[in-house]
Length: 267
Image 1: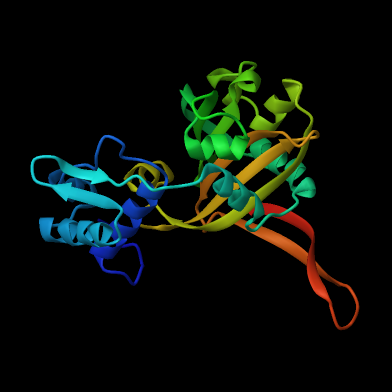
Image 2: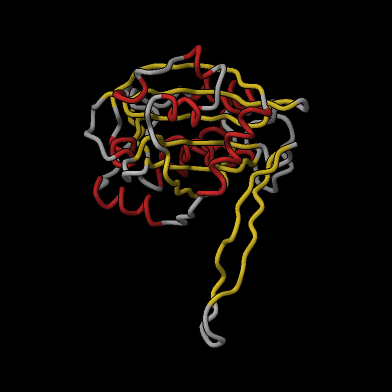
C-alpha cells in the first residue's frame, strides 16, 4: 500500500474501507479471504485480522470456521431509510443542473459498465420503486486533461433507461439523455460527505487505496417530483470542489444562511 498521508494505522484504513463497502451492501456471497485481502491492501495477515476483528465487534460480520467471513444483514426499514435519504443535507440544485451538464461536456468519459439489474432495497427506496424492479446501473469515470476526476455510478428506472445505453452514455451527459428521453428535469437533492477509496476505485482514479475522496449522492427528480436518477459520485478533492454563495435572510434576531448559488469547479 502506497502512502496515503492519512494519520491512521493500516489496519484502521482497511477497516474503514471494508465498513463502507459493507454499508453499501456488498459481499452478499461473503467477504474475500484473508489472503486475498492481504494481497489487495499489501499488508500482513495480522493487519487484516485486526481490521476484521473491529468489524466483528461492531456486529457487521460473522466469522465461522469452515464458512468464512460473512456480512451480517442489517435490519433496515425501507420507508424510514427513504425519508432519511430525502431529508439529510437536502439542497435545491436548480442552478447546478446546468453546471453539471456543462461539466459533462467539458470532460471526457469512459464507460466501465452498463447493465440492467434488479433494484436493491436502497435503490428502490431512493427511486420510489419496488425492490427487484428493473433499473439501469451505469459506472463511468470522468477525466480532465490532468487525469481522472470522478468515479460515477448511476441508477435509472428501467422504463426511462430503455432510451439509451453504453454508446449514448459515452457520448452525452446523462442529464441530456434524460431530457432526450422525454424527462423534464425539475430539481435535485444531494448529500456531500467523505469516503475512502477502495482498491477498485483507487485504480480507476489513479490514487492510493485508502485515499480520501469527496462522496456525493444526488437524487434527480422530474417536474412531477418523480425520482429519475440516483447518483453515487466519488471525486478526487485535488481536482474537484463545490463553491456555494450564501446570504443572510430573516429578521435581525432570526437570521439564517440561505444558499444563493451552487457551482462545481474542476481542474
